[in-house]
Amino acid sequence: MPGILKAAFLSAALLFGHLVHAQEAHCARQVFKSMEQLSHTVEQGEFKLWYATQGKHALADTQDLNGNGVPDRIDDLLLQLQAARDFYSDVLHLTPPLRQPRYDQAHTINVYVLAMRKGNGLAFHEPVQSRPSRKADSEPCGLRIYVNNQLDPSRNLTPAHELFHLYQYGYAMFKRPWYLEGMARLMETAFAGPERLQRYQQVSSGPVSCQDVIGESYSAVRFWWEQQDVDAIEIPASLNRLRYTDGTPVFTNQSFKHGEMVKRVLEELGDLSRNTAQSMDLPSYRWPVREQGSKDFDAPMCQALAKVLH
Image (cartoon, rainbow, N blue to C red; front, side):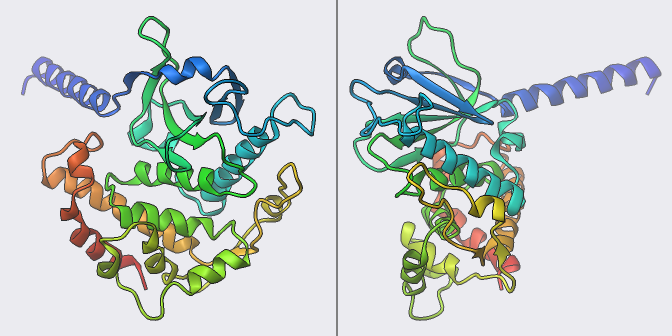
């Protein structure tokens, strides 16, 4: 191939690669009217929390005992999220969502504290640029978590649970409840006290296989609980010293017996996700929602897990 044609070909190929990547990293624009009522924000690291002290979405408790100008429940929410982020990324060595190729256009994790009709939290898999109205400017591209405005973070691990979903989304495209909710519930045991640990230990009276839980959701934690590592990962002293505003410790456990397993599972499912996209002629990240939640992936996922689970 002549030099000029070869150079033109390479340039075209490079341009095509950039275009494909840009399409993969798409960040949708979204009108989110509730933003108008969330008049307060606080930022720390990669998190930006949106909340209200009056109106429909007002916090259930707005006391500020430490006098820093931010309600204690927001301080506690931010503390739990940051502690969870540090544990997942720095202790378990999981890749943070914002460093995953899927989310390379996202710059922040927006946490909206809202009056929710049901549930305590919700994590969304697609990055968006949110704005309160069509005429308003959009916020920078980010990921989203909703947290119920009635929730007390010092008594509830929903924020850490929902954050882990973003880690799962960053690794693989599969949205199967037994995997998403079962494993996220397992992650709560890194923080939880002995009562919750004992409850999980008593969930199953015998061996549980992957196939046993594919029709389940949160209760699938019984499968994940059994996948304990030989060596437990110690909770660092820096995390064990963390306290909510009422003095309650963020971590009440000294170790976590599933850390290496969690990393192996996410990486293996990430490989399966990429291979599946290629074999099914799907984009790497922008799968149709129906495909992401398809039961057809249960068997391949279980087969992949068999490679990395004891």
